Image (cartoon, rainbow, N blue to C red; front, side, top):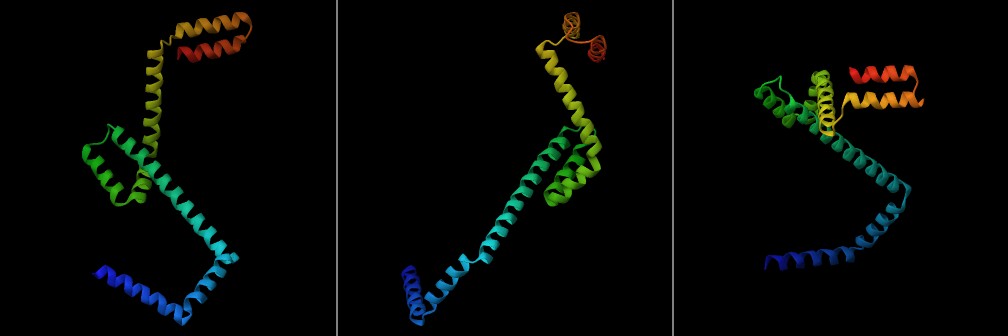
Length: 161
């Protein structure tokens, strides 16, 4: 019953507007405005603003994943400190990420380098990397003339260390 009353009211409102002649004038003015360069510029500005907002959200989300990953990978802080950082990241999302990155950047870099080194060592262990095999390959390259004595010495020192 109420739905029919609302539809009837809307229909009567539209017919009253048409009788007053406002509908056709406002539609014509709106159509003319939409074709104007000003409207096109406004649409482009809105597009740029939306694209920038999406970019900032993706950037924030990426940084959030990096910060949370680093936070839970740490062994030098207690669970309470981790909980405080998580609460700060939830309550103050942008400020929390920037604060963590400013205060913990050196430790983040060191932990990242350590993780990469561990992954490299694990890969060498699983793949069967052997320094002796690599030195033998370098010796064959030196004998064939593909590398010089200086290159052989430098690469051998790198493998041994």
